[in-house]
Amino acid sequence: MPIAIRPLHPVFVGEVSGIDCTRPLAPNEIAAVNAGMDRYAVLVFRDQDLTDAEQLAFTRQFGELENYRSPGHIRQAVEQRLGPGIADFSNLDKDGNIISAEERIWFFKLGDRLWHSDSSFRAIPAKYSLLSGRVLPSWGGNTEFADMRAAYDALDERTKAEIEPLVCLHSLMYSRAAIGFTDLSEAEIEAFRPVRQRLVRTHPVTGRKSLFLAAHAGAIEGWPMPEAQMYLRDLTEHATQREFVYSHRWRLHDLVIWDNRQTMHRARRFDDRNEVRDVRRTTLAGDAITIEQL
Ligand SMILES: [Fe+2]
Image (cartoon, rainbow, N blue to C red; front, side, top):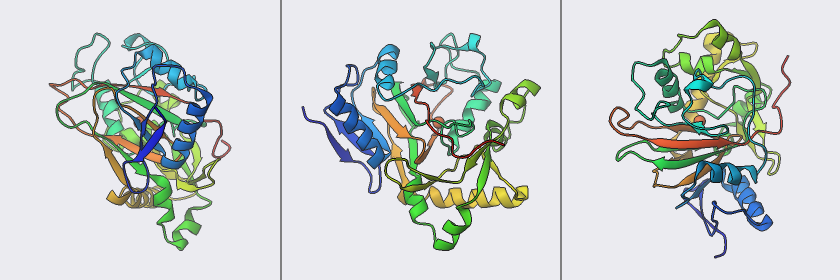
């Protein structure tokens, strides 16, 4: 079956047919997926009943897995339900029970419902994220994506000129503070030390510019905090207008890949007290900084 990509939205997102993600890909298939990612920034693959090992093997065909020393979470390794390389975005604890709504870990996870780009709080932010839908709730739980290239293109010239040199500070502390979660230990605060990121990124293949925004961005270098936070909030509101947003309604065994360099995303509500949502992520490392750390 030939590879085809059908657009799911006027400005981005494609649905791929003709690829079986459980098997090794031919070079032309890898090239087609990469070209599709450059064009669409988000690709949806249907009916991919993947094991964790298959998801990891599929991911590795596109580059190196993200591998870092500093944590991206407050959960300790002993509390993990899943093996190395697979990030758990379910509402389950290590024993497979629904996480208590009183748990710090749950409060922390709620931050994923804010618009963000994965690992923007790392010096080298992530390239692609690959999310596999293993168990889905009967209601809600969509993942929404916003096209940061289209959002950039739609800015007026004055704003484009203003943002061009700006450097933001990104940290998990900022996104969690945005929902009132500030109960962090000294060690966590140290691990979540802010990193510098350019606000305007240029895609290495297409040359298209995009807004590098995330709830993790909580400050603009050289700006007073209220000015910076208001400005970032304003830009985020612009960038997540409906015309730039696709809402993915999950089907069982969907695999969705997004380019964190060109998009933001957020999780949406579901009945997380009574239903299980088990979605599992593998993440491809980025290959470039957006700016030096000082
Ligand atoms: Fe995310």
